[in-house]
Image 1 (tube, rainbow, N blue to C red):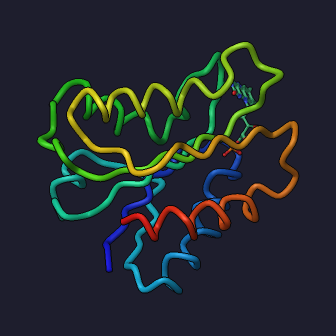
Image 2 (cartoon, protein in one colour):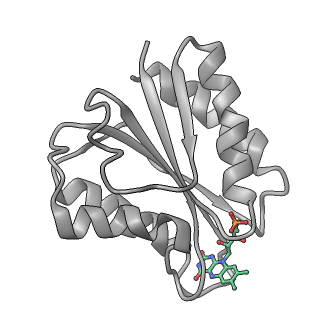
Length: 148
Ligand SMILES: Cc1cc2nc3c(=O)[nH]c(=O)nc-3n(C[C@H](O)[C@H](O)[C@H](O)COP(=O)(O)O)c2cc1C
């Protein structure tokens, strides 16, 4: 059993809905979960065993939603000691934008730069093709949490 900390970046609520949808999957698989749409510095250190799952949308020109910017700034400015820490990425974008899914890639790279260890391939949800992102994310999450 793992403790999973889902760090959410969302502008209009879709990524938060996805995080809440997969929370049920993780509970059913016996994992502990917290969904956090208000990341604050210090929260990564509260439980060093926690697995991090980034669940972010994209805004602007491949930019991070405002509510996940403090997480990125923490990674880039404070160099938290997360080498070896397991993490995953769910990246909600829209391929009609030139910087498709860049926000999730930016966070993935920042985690990797600190030596964190990604579990599985990121799930990229393209709003053009996914009218039920929660359903696709649940399927992905079932597989992902078995790799923990
Ligand atoms: C103003 C605006 C800018 C966006 N910019 C991008 C972008 O640069 N790249 C991308 O892949 N998706 C972009 N998107 C698409 C959103 O990331 C996508 O619709 C996502 O599902 C929204 O999730 P949310 O409701 O959690 O914010 C943009 C959407 C809006 C409304």
